[in-house]
Amino acid sequence: MSESNDDQPENLSFDPSETVSFEDEDGQEHRCVVLAITEYGGDEFAMLAPVEQVESTEQEELELYLFRYDVTEDDTEEFSFIEDEAVFAAVQEIFSAMFGEEEAN
Image (cartoon, rainbow, N blue to C red; front, top):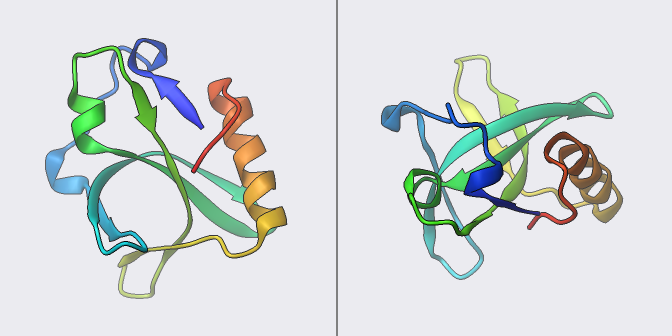
């Protein structure tokens, strides 16, 4: 899913201390901000975007990521890859409807 910065709400802001990081399959670390959380099939899912792209004033498309989202008993946020392709497609469709776009990573 791609979303250009000019399509984002003008008041899109976040606390830099409230970012999350994840490591991709190539071992590269990404620092992201959570843009939205939604439910599907009794689970929660999060849409993340790289901090540097959200902060950028350039008119570039945001690279967006979808993850399963959980909060543990000790209030730790956990983000995990969505393994099931059908679940990923359904969650992608929900976020696409929310943001008016077609694809997500």
